[in-house]
Image (cartoon, rainbow, N blue to C red; front, top):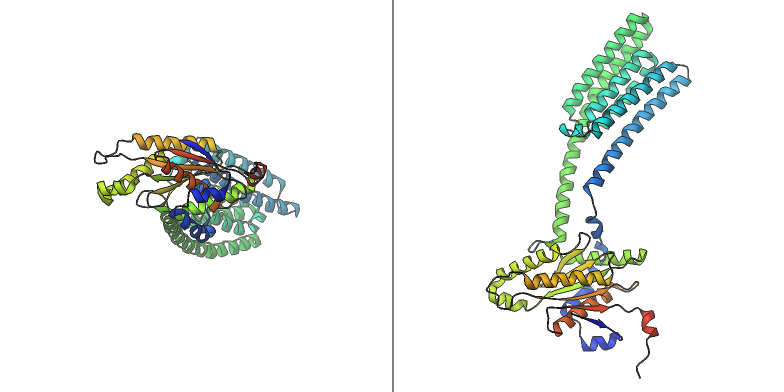
Length: 411
């Protein structure tokens, strides 16, 4: 392993001509520039954070609907249609219901149920609360119908239409029971007629709405399956299936993205070019199937010795790229040397007379340079490792244009 510091790019190009891989790289960069994906963030997804965000969104959604109902009832109170005591009862329901479900989720009791978000119990509690409010103040039935639809929509993607249909029947029965209680208490024929009209309208609209929800659920399932298939296709498009690592297309796109991110936030990143030594002889000794197995084993060794944020993939043949996001040169060098050592000491098959080794070139990105210039420097370092006897890591230290101007001229 040794370090190289280039003073003149033109002289370097004459001494160490670009490899065939580098000659192909220009076209790849042009073709894949539009295919940039957030590769490093793919590894940063945490299931715990995702679950926490999902729970937070559910609480915000439910709280928003409760707040809307309270505001609507408050507007009726300001209009003199609803008593203040009804608002107080509603607040008690909200406090008790929220605390109960909070404790259930906190104790993880919801995990015992098939539907982990407990949307059916939540909307059932909501309907019960609205029916009680309707009983306490008949004027509250003005807002019962719209909020019934809103409540059903809240659960439409989680609760099957069969259960929603049964719930609607129970709600309509409860509504009819409230009408009977009102008539017995108030003996108001006009109010009874008005409430019967509301009940009749709900009896027609809610089942029809459930049928429409069923169509939406069916469409949702179709789109969900299609989305998963597309996701699998996209994942396959990123992978080199033969050796189970990222492919050339994805690596070039990731390299472009890391350049953009580095230019925006100034974070360093490094690139390593890895090339298996004497791979043609390996194929001659083991055959192409044996050579493929060596590639798979090497890929596995490399991926076991990098961080989750690092991006490893096959560029072509026996050549690989390794991108180190948010990493300076020394940690990238240490990781590359660890991979080299692991490959050298791996128990390869006895048929390999030479064993297997890898030559690695490492460099760091200079802000503002092109991806081609970065790759050229790493590729040149790898070429130096080949020329120096193989099975080593060569670092090509980056030199900015400003540093080159400060260097004394050669006369």
